[in-house]
Image (cartoon, rainbow, N blue to C red; front, top):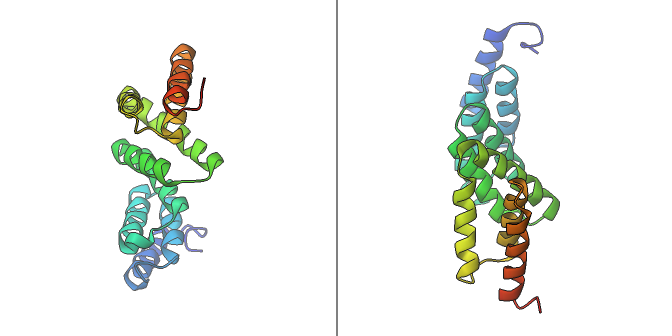
Length: 168
């Protein structure tokens, strides 16, 4: 309400007071992060989500909050943190459509950082030593498709299928 009326100082003070009083693990922290972002303080928004994530620990802040945090990391120039979080999310998310979205974000950030090849090499190593799973093979195919290398993508599929005993 303060922000809508142009009273930015009051809005900031109200959020600071709420931060002081609110449960560190409370859902209100998500709303606070959104409010900080609307006030233009994306760094404070990211810090709020980081604190929520840390406070909840094993209970986790949930993938939605973590995806929002990864986006904020990119927006405030902390791309390495964004990549780490997208990679972590990619390893945990079971929903295939959601995982494809996370893969896309991961590849976008990795491309900006110049680490897409490093990720591909790590997954290729897993493929060669037999520890790769469907998720790894899928990401590797996505990476090669993204860099317009359909031959390598096809080779990866064939190699994985052969090693997994799924091919001829």
